[in-house]
Length: 340
Ligand SMILES: NC(=O)C1=CN([C@@H]2O[C@H](COP(=O)(O)OP(=O)(O)OC[C@H]3O[C@@H](n4cnc5c(N)ncnc54)[C@H](O)[C@@H]3O)[C@@H](O)[C@H]2O)C=CC1
Ligand SMILES: O=C(CO)COP(=O)(O)O
Image (cartoon, rainbow, N blue to C red; front, top):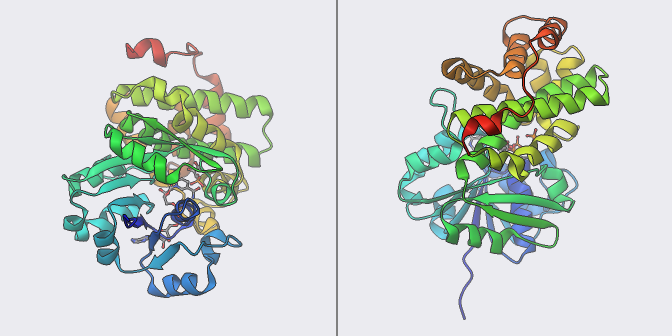
């Protein structure tokens, strides 16, 4: 009889907890690592993670732990669900234990100074690891509450994709494969910025036409940027592109949308972020994205406008005026320009 290897989930926030439960539901033994031993103990005893997923029962197959070296030693397949600001800092010290592992990033952010995506950081700190990215329209609470959901595992390593599909694909969670790791990961990081704008628009009571314009022009803008970096625009028509953009820009359950909504209600950025109390990656992404767009000379009026509101003291009214009076452009410009 073969003994089944446990699977590691690194990060005990809302998404790590949701993924751990899905794996356990499929009969996998899961080590859910979090840095705080008291939180691990409380989850072990109460089978609930009340700070991040209140009311969701954590299955018996999930073993919360704060011992990272032991977790990595026991597991070949490792899902990483840390905030982007913590990923390098948390995993660099254990980089040797990552050798040869299958590392799947679920983190949707961009590193500030380097403009690296999280799987690129994993590749850098663990050059001998096998790397993948899981991304798609996957609000953690809905995943945990069994809303019918689809996601994408992206990697050039087909065996890794198959392994993730075998372990994660289940009754309520479909996992599609893609070879375009860069495009899938970039889509997940970029859409957070536009979710902040959509939350603002909702708080200001803007109409349905406006919401649709925002989402569609956001797709054009993020794809234009991605194509400039060499990504395949077709990936942006999939779950990890337009799929994730739609859910995050239209759901009050998205933390990025919530930050935008709070800003639209008149809160400062600091108070808006504080009120959410969970990670909203778009706040950091807008800074690095604006700098990169300027460097590459990519036309990104929505990013420029949001950056002006958040960091340059412009009012929303001024930015809307500038956006609406800009010269009209061609509609679907990014596919023909890409050469794909
Ligand atoms: N929540 C969601 O619906 C989804 C989130 N994601 C992505 O997953 C990543 C993690 O997000 P969430 O789980 O939602 O965040 P969260 O805010 O719910 O939880 C963050 C977790 O990371 C831990 N953490 C923070 N700094 C740490 C450090 N230095 N070392 C170790 N642990 C640390 C916190 O204690 C907490 O357990 C983000 O990049 C997010 O974009 C992806 C898909 C869906
Ligand atoms: O990535 C997500 C859904 O796919 C979660 O979005 P938020 O981080 O804005 O909650």
